[in-house]
Length: 312
Ligand code: CP
Image (cartoon, rainbow, N blue to C red; front, top):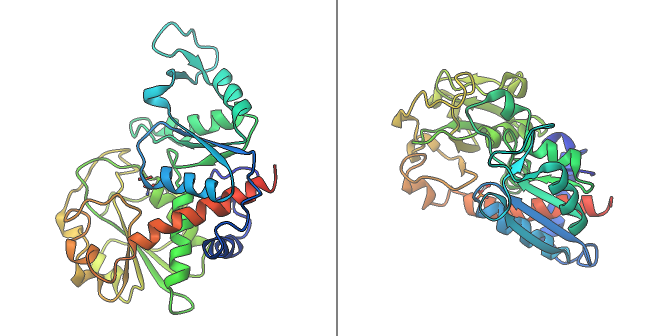
């Protein structure tokens, strides 16, 4: 693996899942691999899980880590080519990426979308610019359109908890007071397309994700119908893709309840708003596997970093 920008960078999903599960059993087996190597973790946005689990993963592999919150602590970066930098931006990505590449062996980046400019968000300007001007591999810690480390952790979790060969997995939209990105559902959809699961998406009309990503995945606008006989229910909010970044519904009827969940396992990437996305009874009960899912963020990141280190 040279970079980890999207699910498409995974050659074999089952093999990477197995590698992550092996690392979960033997976290320090490759401690020598990252010796004298440094992971630079750059954040344009907040994080709890991604920051701590990726750092832990790197440290398990013997790597050093440098963490920087670019928005607050760095110079404001310019991404446009040929721009006259007489405004707020103080440093061009060309210099910044080249300089950072001299200090670290791998760059991991988090950069959310604007949710106001679809074309710009889909162009993934920040992560693509780092890829273009850095001389070291790039790992996506959630970009405008993708969160592949989360999706790999999701796939590991389903693999661990599945009790039948081909489980039914439902991605169910839930209401949220703020407009949220599409990165998590996009990557989850892509990952489910690479797994042997019976996959259905349910959301209110108007919340269709990018059809180039969902392709032929069945979409059922009737949540109760979609949830029938589900083994795993992944609940997530996202803003409208067609009316880009808009909140078209906050219908509380779409919140996940114990009654709707049935016998299924409950999944969410976290952070989660209790009693808006999902009722307390689920999160506090035995069917929730969100804590185990968050734990798998470490083994997902470790499997990815291991593969990249082996190709340096
Ligand atoms: N799920 C996830 O990426 O969590 P953080 O935003 O806290 O990193």
